[in-house]
Amino acid sequence: MPDMRRKPGSLVPLEVEILEASVTLRSRGLREAHGFLLARTVAEGTDAKRLTAYGTLYKALDRLERGGLLESRWEDPEYAAEAARPRRRFYRITAIGESALADARVAADRSAGAAARPHPTGSPVR
Amino acid sequence: MVRGWVAVYTLGLPAEMQARRRGEVAGDLADETQDAMRRGELEHLRRRRLVRWLLGIPADVAWRLFEAPVTAQRIRARLPQIGWVPLSRVSLTMVVIVAVGSAGGLAIVTVPYLTGQATAGTWPGWGPIGFSMGCAAVLVGILLAVPWPRRGVAVMVPGVVIGLLAAPWLWSCWLLSLVGVLIRVYQADRDAWPWRTPGARHTPGSGRPP
Image (cartoon, rainbow over all chains, first blue to last red; front, side):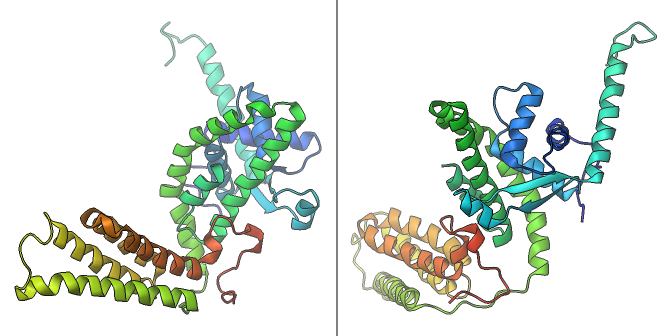
């Protein structure tokens, strides 16, 4: 049950980037992705030099999931055992997440447009 | 180091939440290592990992203080309450040793003072008061640890610190007291320890492991 305190539309930049990364990975054929892959995709998408910190990443993922924007599941332990590594937690964007991402994109476009548009009085837009 | 930190900040959360966060980070670390190997960047891995860990600490602390308790409360509300965990032979032995030792120490120091038989200058400064306080806290802590191990630790640790300050030469006794209470915590909450495999975790409500 979503219980995020903020409205689903009011996402912080990292949350938008995570949702963007989920959509990007899905377009590459990955319906769900583990935390590290999301961090790597976020870094690639934003040209960041370093990956999102562990705490920041998993806090954001937790919040997105509690808000119903992402859903997650543990990897099959047998598969992880075969690969000789710990189990991964896979995240997948939900319909609510996609809608929130679309809203965030519209809001970003609006604010970018407002910033670029000259103010009627000639003073800069704050 | 990262795993140790995760183990620390998830202490006190329901097993389900602990397992999840520890598992997520363990998976991330493994994937990060594989990724560094694939990219031929293994020599930078340690430094990058340190930076990722340090930069995430404020978020971890914020999550633990403000977000995790809400989820934890909801999880605890839907789980059946776990009953009392009977003492094992080892934990019973430690409880008895620590309880008898601390009660004995308390009696040896306080009784002469209360009866007026103690000579001045036997203990320097606030030694007898600190020692008595330490013994009393250790005694209460170890007895409290029988039904509520974590509360026992909460009382025991300050008691041991006070005792160590008052009578540092008895460090082995204070250490033994701490070991005693930790054995009880381990016995009662064994699945919460960092070296336990998250996947093999006992879930509350399905009965305690033998």
